[in-house]
Length: 439
Image 1 (cartoon, one colour):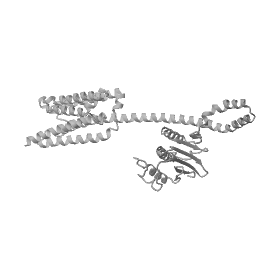
Image 2 (image 1 turned 90 degrees about the vertical axis):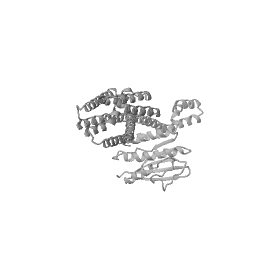
Image 3 (image 1 turned 60 degrees about the horizontal axis):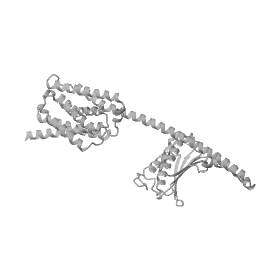
Image 4 (image 1 turned 180 degrees about the vertical axis):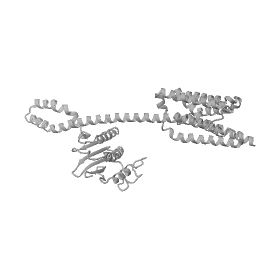
Protein backbone atom coordinates (compact mmCIF):
# COMPACT_ATOMS: atom_id res chain seq x y z
CA UNK A 1 0.00 0.00 0.00
CA UNK A 2 2.81 2.38 0.92
CA UNK A 3 4.63 1.52 -2.31
CA UNK A 4 1.49 2.30 -4.32
CA UNK A 5 1.23 5.64 -2.51
CA UNK A 6 4.84 6.48 -3.36
CA UNK A 7 4.30 5.63 -7.03
CA UNK A 8 1.12 7.73 -7.17
CA UNK A 9 2.80 10.74 -5.53
CA UNK A 10 5.76 10.37 -7.88
CA UNK A 11 3.46 10.44 -10.92
CA UNK A 12 1.58 13.49 -9.61
CA UNK A 13 4.80 15.40 -8.87
CA UNK A 14 6.15 14.54 -12.32
CA UNK A 15 2.99 15.83 -14.02
CA UNK A 16 3.01 19.02 -11.91
CA UNK A 17 6.67 19.68 -12.76
CA UNK A 18 6.02 19.13 -16.47
CA UNK A 19 3.00 21.46 -16.45
CA UNK A 20 4.94 24.08 -14.46
CA UNK A 21 7.85 23.95 -16.93
CA UNK A 22 5.50 24.41 -19.88
CA UNK A 23 3.65 27.25 -18.19
CA UNK A 24 6.89 29.06 -17.39
CA UNK A 25 8.06 28.53 -20.97
CA UNK A 26 4.98 29.90 -22.73
CA UNK A 27 4.61 32.71 -20.18
CA UNK A 28 8.17 33.91 -20.68
CA UNK A 29 7.54 33.83 -24.42
CA UNK A 30 4.52 36.07 -23.88
CA UNK A 31 1.98 33.59 -25.28
CA UNK A 32 -1.61 33.43 -24.01
CA UNK A 33 -2.20 29.88 -25.21
CA UNK A 34 -0.67 27.14 -27.31
CA UNK A 35 -2.27 24.45 -29.50
CA UNK A 36 -3.57 21.38 -27.72
CA UNK A 37 -1.30 19.27 -29.90
CA UNK A 38 1.73 21.06 -28.47
CA UNK A 39 0.56 20.47 -24.90
CA UNK A 40 -0.07 16.76 -25.53
CA UNK A 41 3.29 16.10 -27.19
CA UNK A 42 5.26 18.23 -24.72
CA UNK A 43 3.67 16.79 -21.57
CA UNK A 44 4.01 13.22 -22.84
CA UNK A 45 7.67 13.76 -23.72
CA UNK A 46 8.60 15.48 -20.45
CA UNK A 47 6.88 12.83 -18.35
CA UNK A 48 8.55 10.06 -20.37
CA UNK A 49 11.98 11.62 -19.80
CA UNK A 50 11.40 11.62 -16.04
CA UNK A 51 10.36 7.96 -15.89
CA UNK A 52 13.30 6.89 -18.07
CA UNK A 53 15.69 8.47 -15.56
CA UNK A 54 16.50 5.11 -13.82
CA UNK A 55 18.20 4.07 -17.07
CA UNK A 56 20.58 7.04 -16.83
CA UNK A 57 23.78 6.73 -14.74
CA UNK A 58 23.25 8.59 -11.47
CA UNK A 59 26.13 11.01 -11.92
CA UNK A 60 24.88 12.19 -15.32
CA UNK A 61 21.17 12.35 -14.53
CA UNK A 62 21.04 16.16 -14.12
CA UNK A 63 22.84 16.82 -17.40
CA UNK A 64 20.84 14.30 -19.44
CA UNK A 65 17.53 15.36 -17.90
CA UNK A 66 18.09 19.09 -18.52
CA UNK A 67 19.35 18.40 -22.06
CA UNK A 68 16.22 16.38 -22.87
CA UNK A 69 13.98 19.12 -21.47
CA UNK A 70 15.78 21.70 -23.59
CA UNK A 71 15.56 19.62 -26.78
CA UNK A 72 11.83 18.94 -26.30
CA UNK A 73 10.84 22.54 -25.58
CA UNK A 74 13.15 24.03 -28.18
CA UNK A 75 12.10 21.62 -30.94
CA UNK A 76 8.38 21.93 -30.36
CA UNK A 77 8.49 25.72 -30.04
CA UNK A 78 10.50 26.04 -33.26
CA UNK A 79 7.80 23.99 -35.00
CA UNK A 80 4.74 25.70 -33.51
CA UNK A 81 6.16 29.25 -33.25
CA UNK A 82 8.24 29.61 -36.40
CA UNK A 83 8.06 33.41 -36.38
CA UNK A 84 10.04 33.69 -33.14
CA UNK A 85 13.86 33.87 -33.32
CA UNK A 86 15.52 30.63 -32.23
CA UNK A 87 17.82 32.42 -29.77
CA UNK A 88 14.77 33.64 -27.80
CA UNK A 89 13.22 30.16 -27.78
CA UNK A 90 16.53 28.69 -26.58
CA UNK A 91 16.84 31.31 -23.84
CA UNK A 92 13.40 30.71 -22.35
CA UNK A 93 13.47 26.92 -22.73
CA UNK A 94 16.65 26.79 -20.62
CA UNK A 95 15.32 29.33 -18.16
CA UNK A 96 12.00 27.49 -17.65
CA UNK A 97 13.81 24.32 -16.58
CA UNK A 98 16.09 26.27 -14.23
CA UNK A 99 13.14 27.94 -12.48
CA UNK A 100 11.29 24.69 -11.88
CA UNK A 101 14.23 22.77 -10.41
CA UNK A 102 15.82 25.51 -8.32
CA UNK A 103 13.52 24.92 -5.27
CA UNK A 104 14.42 21.22 -5.32
CA UNK A 105 18.12 22.03 -5.50
CA UNK A 106 17.67 24.31 -2.49
CA UNK A 107 15.87 21.55 -0.59
CA UNK A 108 18.69 19.12 -1.39
CA UNK A 109 21.22 21.66 -0.09
CA UNK A 110 19.34 22.20 3.17
CA UNK A 111 18.49 18.50 3.75
CA UNK A 112 21.12 16.43 1.91
CA UNK A 113 20.23 13.18 3.76
CA UNK A 114 16.61 13.08 4.94
CA UNK A 115 16.02 10.44 7.58
CA UNK A 116 12.38 9.86 6.71
CA UNK A 117 11.42 8.96 3.13
CA UNK A 118 7.80 10.10 3.54
CA UNK A 119 8.94 13.51 4.78
CA UNK A 120 11.20 13.86 1.77
CA UNK A 121 8.38 13.00 -0.67
CA UNK A 122 5.88 15.35 0.97
CA UNK A 123 8.43 18.19 0.99
CA UNK A 124 9.19 17.76 -2.72
CA UNK A 125 5.46 17.57 -3.49
CA UNK A 126 4.83 20.79 -1.55
CA UNK A 127 7.64 22.53 -3.45
CA UNK A 128 6.19 21.40 -6.78
CA UNK A 129 2.74 22.71 -5.87
CA UNK A 130 4.19 26.04 -4.71
CA UNK A 131 6.12 26.33 -7.99
CA UNK A 132 2.89 25.77 -9.91
CA UNK A 133 1.04 28.48 -7.96
CA UNK A 134 3.98 30.84 -8.48
CA UNK A 135 3.89 30.49 -12.26
CA UNK A 136 0.10 30.91 -12.30
CA UNK A 137 0.42 34.16 -10.33
CA UNK A 138 3.26 35.38 -12.53
CA UNK A 139 1.37 34.43 -15.69
CA UNK A 140 -1.63 36.51 -14.62
CA UNK A 141 0.39 39.73 -14.84
CA UNK A 142 3.33 38.97 -17.12
CA UNK A 143 1.28 38.65 -20.30
CA UNK A 144 0.88 42.43 -20.24
CA UNK A 145 4.65 42.94 -20.37
CA UNK A 146 5.76 40.97 -23.50
CA UNK A 147 9.55 40.99 -23.58
CA UNK A 148 9.93 39.10 -26.89
CA UNK A 149 9.50 42.28 -28.99
CA UNK A 150 12.44 43.92 -27.26
CA UNK A 151 14.62 40.81 -27.47
CA UNK A 152 13.86 40.38 -31.17
CA UNK A 153 15.17 43.88 -31.90
CA UNK A 154 18.25 43.66 -29.63
CA UNK A 155 20.22 40.60 -30.72
CA UNK A 156 23.41 41.33 -28.75
CA UNK A 157 21.49 41.73 -25.50
CA UNK A 158 19.63 38.48 -26.16
CA UNK A 159 22.88 36.59 -26.81
CA UNK A 160 24.33 37.89 -23.51
CA UNK A 161 21.27 36.59 -21.66
CA UNK A 162 21.46 33.26 -23.50
CA UNK A 163 25.16 32.78 -22.71
CA UNK A 164 24.49 33.63 -19.06
CA UNK A 165 21.68 31.07 -18.92
CA UNK A 166 23.87 28.40 -20.51
CA UNK A 167 26.56 29.19 -17.93
CA UNK A 168 24.09 28.76 -15.06
CA UNK A 169 22.87 25.52 -16.64
CA UNK A 170 26.43 24.12 -16.87
CA UNK A 171 27.18 25.20 -13.29
CA UNK A 172 23.99 23.55 -12.06
CA UNK A 173 24.87 20.30 -13.86
CA UNK A 174 28.39 20.34 -12.41
CA UNK A 175 27.05 20.88 -8.90
CA UNK A 176 24.65 17.96 -9.40
CA UNK A 177 27.52 15.73 -10.54
CA UNK A 178 29.76 16.76 -7.60
CA UNK A 179 26.90 16.32 -5.13
CA UNK A 180 26.17 12.77 -6.24
CA UNK A 181 29.87 11.84 -6.10
CA UNK A 182 30.26 13.44 -2.63
CA UNK A 183 32.74 16.00 -3.91
CA UNK A 184 30.43 18.91 -2.99
CA UNK A 185 27.82 18.90 -0.26
CA UNK A 186 26.00 22.07 -1.36
CA UNK A 187 26.07 25.65 -0.15
CA UNK A 188 23.13 27.93 0.55
CA UNK A 189 25.07 30.97 -0.68
CA UNK A 190 25.50 29.33 -4.08
CA UNK A 191 21.78 28.61 -4.35
CA UNK A 192 20.99 32.22 -3.47
CA UNK A 193 23.48 33.43 -6.07
CA UNK A 194 21.87 31.22 -8.75
CA UNK A 195 18.41 32.47 -7.71
CA UNK A 196 19.56 36.08 -8.11
CA UNK A 197 20.87 35.29 -11.60
CA UNK A 198 17.60 33.57 -12.56
CA UNK A 199 15.53 36.53 -11.29
CA UNK A 200 17.79 38.90 -13.22
CA UNK A 201 17.29 36.89 -16.41
CA UNK A 202 13.51 37.27 -15.95
CA UNK A 203 13.31 40.86 -14.70
CA UNK A 204 15.98 42.60 -16.77
CA UNK A 205 14.30 41.88 -20.16
CA UNK A 206 10.94 42.97 -18.72
CA UNK A 207 12.35 46.25 -17.35
CA UNK A 208 14.26 46.95 -20.57
CA UNK A 209 11.16 46.16 -22.61
CA UNK A 210 9.01 48.55 -20.57
CA UNK A 211 11.60 51.31 -20.81
CA UNK A 212 11.88 50.76 -24.57
CA UNK A 213 8.11 50.87 -25.01
CA UNK A 214 7.91 54.03 -22.89
CA UNK A 215 10.47 55.72 -25.16
CA UNK A 216 8.47 54.66 -28.21
CA UNK A 217 5.24 55.99 -26.68
CA UNK A 218 6.91 59.31 -25.83
CA UNK A 219 8.31 59.57 -29.34
CA UNK A 220 4.91 58.79 -30.86
CA UNK A 221 3.30 61.29 -28.49
CA UNK A 222 5.75 64.00 -29.60
CA UNK A 223 5.03 63.23 -33.25
CA UNK A 224 1.28 63.37 -32.58
CA UNK A 225 1.57 66.70 -30.76
CA UNK A 226 3.66 68.08 -33.62
CA UNK A 227 1.08 66.94 -36.17
CA UNK A 228 -1.74 68.45 -34.10
CA UNK A 229 0.12 71.76 -33.82
CA UNK A 230 0.75 71.81 -37.57
CA UNK A 231 -2.91 71.01 -38.18
CA UNK A 232 -3.96 73.74 -35.75
CA UNK A 233 -1.71 76.29 -37.47
CA UNK A 234 -3.14 75.34 -40.86
CA UNK A 235 -6.67 75.75 -39.49
CA UNK A 236 -5.77 79.11 -38.00
CA UNK A 237 -4.42 80.31 -41.32
CA UNK A 238 -7.54 79.10 -43.11
CA UNK A 239 -9.78 80.81 -40.57
CA UNK A 240 -7.81 84.06 -40.85
CA UNK A 241 -8.22 83.96 -44.62
CA UNK A 242 -11.92 83.23 -44.18
CA UNK A 243 -12.18 86.15 -41.74
CA UNK A 244 -10.56 88.54 -44.22
CA UNK A 245 -12.92 87.34 -46.92
CA UNK A 246 -15.90 88.13 -44.71
CA UNK A 247 -14.72 91.72 -44.48
CA UNK A 248 -14.20 92.00 -48.25
CA UNK A 249 -17.34 90.35 -49.51
CA UNK A 250 -19.53 93.42 -48.92
CA UNK A 251 -17.24 95.52 -51.12
CA UNK A 252 -17.29 92.81 -53.75
CA UNK A 253 -21.11 92.70 -53.69
CA UNK A 254 -21.27 96.52 -53.90
CA UNK A 255 -19.03 96.54 -56.98
CA UNK A 256 -21.06 93.75 -58.51
CA UNK A 257 -24.31 95.63 -57.81
CA UNK A 258 -23.01 98.80 -59.49
CA UNK A 259 -21.96 96.82 -62.54
CA UNK A 260 -25.39 95.15 -62.79
CA UNK A 261 -27.25 98.48 -62.41
CA UNK A 262 -25.07 100.00 -65.13
CA UNK A 263 -25.73 96.95 -67.32
CA UNK A 264 -21.97 96.62 -67.70
CA UNK A 265 -21.75 92.85 -68.10
CA UNK A 266 -18.06 93.02 -68.95
CA UNK A 267 -17.41 94.33 -65.42
CA UNK A 268 -19.77 91.70 -63.99
CA UNK A 269 -17.79 88.97 -65.76
CA UNK A 270 -14.49 90.51 -64.68
CA UNK A 271 -15.59 90.79 -61.02
CA UNK A 272 -16.82 87.20 -61.01
CA UNK A 273 -13.72 85.62 -62.51
CA UNK A 274 -11.17 87.79 -60.68
CA UNK A 275 -12.77 88.18 -57.23
CA UNK A 276 -15.53 85.66 -56.66
CA UNK A 277 -14.50 82.42 -58.36
CA UNK A 278 -11.02 82.20 -56.70
CA UNK A 279 -12.73 82.37 -53.29
CA UNK A 280 -15.38 79.73 -53.87
CA UNK A 281 -13.61 77.31 -51.54
CA UNK A 282 -13.87 79.90 -48.76
CA UNK A 283 -17.62 80.18 -49.03
CA UNK A 284 -18.05 76.91 -47.17
CA UNK A 285 -18.81 77.36 -43.50
CA UNK A 286 -15.67 76.96 -41.40
CA UNK A 287 -15.99 74.31 -38.74
CA UNK A 288 -13.46 75.98 -36.44
CA UNK A 289 -13.63 79.75 -36.34
CA UNK A 290 -10.90 81.91 -34.80
CA UNK A 291 -8.92 79.13 -33.15
CA UNK A 292 -5.99 81.55 -32.82
CA UNK A 293 -8.02 83.46 -30.19
CA UNK A 294 -7.12 80.71 -27.66
CA UNK A 295 -3.66 81.25 -26.17
CA UNK A 296 -3.28 77.72 -24.70
CA UNK A 297 -1.52 75.20 -26.94
CA UNK A 298 -2.96 72.32 -24.86
CA UNK A 299 -6.55 73.45 -25.37
CA UNK A 300 -5.89 74.11 -29.06
CA UNK A 301 -4.58 70.58 -29.41
CA UNK A 302 -7.60 69.18 -27.55
CA UNK A 303 -10.05 71.04 -29.80
CA UNK A 304 -8.26 69.97 -32.96
CA UNK A 305 -8.11 66.36 -31.73
CA UNK A 306 -11.84 66.21 -30.89
CA UNK A 307 -12.66 67.92 -34.19
CA UNK A 308 -10.68 65.23 -36.01
CA UNK A 309 -12.32 62.38 -34.04
CA UNK A 310 -15.81 63.77 -34.71
CA UNK A 311 -15.08 64.25 -38.41
CA UNK A 312 -14.06 60.61 -38.70
CA UNK A 313 -17.47 59.67 -37.26
CA UNK A 314 -19.21 61.93 -39.84
CA UNK A 315 -20.31 64.39 -37.17
CA UNK A 316 -20.75 68.08 -37.97
CA UNK A 317 -18.43 69.39 -35.24
CA UNK A 318 -18.16 73.19 -35.09
CA UNK A 319 -16.17 75.37 -32.72
CA UNK A 320 -16.91 79.08 -32.36
CA UNK A 321 -14.68 81.53 -30.52
CA UNK A 322 -15.91 85.13 -30.62
CA UNK A 323 -12.89 86.92 -29.13
CA UNK A 324 -9.45 86.44 -27.64
CA UNK A 325 -9.63 84.36 -24.46
CA UNK A 326 -6.79 84.44 -21.94
CA UNK A 327 -6.24 81.02 -20.36
CA UNK A 328 -2.69 81.82 -19.21
CA UNK A 329 -4.07 83.28 -15.97
CA UNK A 330 -4.85 79.74 -14.78
CA UNK A 331 -1.97 78.04 -12.95
CA UNK A 332 -2.85 74.54 -14.11
CA UNK A 333 -4.54 74.33 -17.50
CA UNK A 334 -5.29 70.63 -16.85
CA UNK A 335 -8.01 71.80 -14.44
CA UNK A 336 -9.87 73.02 -17.54
CA UNK A 337 -8.55 70.46 -20.01
CA UNK A 338 -9.95 67.38 -18.25
CA UNK A 339 -13.58 68.57 -17.74
CA UNK A 340 -13.75 69.95 -21.27
CA UNK A 341 -12.43 66.68 -22.70
CA UNK A 342 -15.13 64.71 -20.86
CA UNK A 343 -17.88 67.08 -22.04
CA UNK A 344 -16.80 66.84 -25.68
CA UNK A 345 -16.37 63.05 -25.52
CA UNK A 346 -19.90 62.67 -24.19
CA UNK A 347 -21.27 65.09 -26.77
CA UNK A 348 -19.58 63.24 -29.64
CA UNK A 349 -20.82 59.88 -28.38
CA UNK A 350 -24.41 61.14 -28.01
CA UNK A 351 -24.37 62.85 -31.41
CA UNK A 352 -23.13 59.68 -33.10
CA UNK A 353 -26.42 57.94 -32.34
CA UNK A 354 -28.59 60.95 -33.25
CA UNK A 355 -30.14 61.76 -36.61
CA UNK A 356 -28.55 65.17 -37.27
CA UNK A 357 -25.11 64.26 -35.81
CA UNK A 358 -24.16 67.75 -34.70
CA UNK A 359 -21.86 69.08 -31.96
CA UNK A 360 -21.33 72.80 -31.43
CA UNK A 361 -18.79 74.25 -28.94
CA UNK A 362 -18.85 77.97 -28.12
CA UNK A 363 -16.26 79.95 -26.13
CA UNK A 364 -17.40 83.28 -24.68
CA UNK A 365 -15.40 85.53 -22.35
CA UNK A 366 -17.30 87.78 -19.98
CA UNK A 367 -15.98 90.29 -17.47
CA UNK A 368 -16.11 87.92 -14.50
CA UNK A 369 -16.02 84.49 -16.08
CA UNK A 370 -15.41 82.38 -19.17
CA UNK A 371 -18.35 80.38 -20.52
CA UNK A 372 -17.95 77.24 -22.60
CA UNK A 373 -21.13 75.81 -24.11
CA UNK A 374 -21.13 72.27 -25.51
CA UNK A 375 -24.28 71.47 -27.51
CA UNK A 376 -25.08 68.16 -29.16
CA UNK A 377 -28.02 66.47 -30.82
CA UNK A 378 -29.33 63.32 -29.17
CA UNK A 379 -31.44 60.26 -29.91
CA UNK A 380 -32.61 59.53 -26.35
CA UNK A 381 -33.10 62.43 -23.93
CA UNK A 382 -30.88 62.13 -20.82
CA UNK A 383 -32.39 62.24 -17.35
CA UNK A 384 -31.16 65.55 -15.91
CA UNK A 385 -31.92 64.41 -12.35
CA UNK A 386 -29.87 61.22 -12.53
CA UNK A 387 -27.22 61.86 -15.16
CA UNK A 388 -24.50 62.93 -12.70
CA UNK A 389 -24.92 59.80 -10.58
CA UNK A 390 -22.09 57.29 -10.81
CA UNK A 391 -22.93 54.39 -13.13
CA UNK A 392 -25.94 56.04 -14.78
CA UNK A 393 -25.90 56.21 -18.58
CA UNK A 394 -28.38 56.14 -21.44
CA UNK A 395 -25.76 54.62 -23.75
CA UNK A 396 -25.65 50.88 -24.40
CA UNK A 397 -22.67 49.04 -22.85
CA UNK A 398 -21.44 52.29 -21.31
CA UNK A 399 -20.17 52.45 -17.76
CA UNK A 400 -21.47 55.98 -17.19
CA UNK A 401 -18.72 57.23 -14.91
CA UNK A 402 -17.70 60.22 -17.11
CA UNK A 403 -20.22 62.80 -15.89
CA UNK A 404 -20.05 61.55 -12.30
CA UNK A 405 -16.28 62.01 -12.29
CA UNK A 406 -16.75 65.41 -13.92
CA UNK A 407 -19.21 66.45 -11.22
CA UNK A 408 -16.79 65.36 -8.47
CA UNK A 409 -13.97 67.19 -10.21
CA UNK A 410 -15.98 70.43 -10.46
CA UNK A 411 -17.11 70.19 -6.83
CA UNK A 412 -13.45 70.03 -5.89
CA UNK A 413 -12.79 73.42 -7.52
CA UNK A 414 -15.12 76.23 -6.35
CA UNK A 415 -14.31 78.45 -9.35
CA UNK A 416 -16.01 75.98 -11.73
CA UNK A 417 -19.71 75.49 -12.36
CA UNK A 418 -21.65 73.13 -14.58
CA UNK A 419 -25.30 73.33 -15.61
CA UNK A 420 -27.36 71.43 -18.17
CA UNK A 421 -30.20 72.36 -20.52
CA UNK A 422 -32.42 70.08 -22.57
CA UNK A 423 -34.21 71.36 -25.69
CA UNK A 424 -36.95 69.40 -27.40
CA UNK A 425 -37.04 71.46 -30.61
CA UNK A 426 -34.52 70.96 -32.01
CA UNK A 427 -33.46 67.92 -29.99
CA UNK A 428 -30.28 69.30 -28.43
CA UNK A 429 -28.57 68.86 -25.10
CA UNK A 430 -26.45 71.73 -23.80
CA UNK A 431 -23.81 71.70 -21.07
CA UNK A 432 -22.73 75.10 -19.70
CA UNK A 433 -19.23 75.00 -18.26
CA UNK A 434 -18.40 78.24 -16.38
CA UNK A 435 -14.94 79.22 -15.10
CA UNK A 436 -14.66 82.17 -12.74
CA UNK A 437 -11.74 84.55 -13.34
CA UNK A 438 -11.21 85.75 -9.78
CA UNK A 439 -9.44 82.61 -8.57
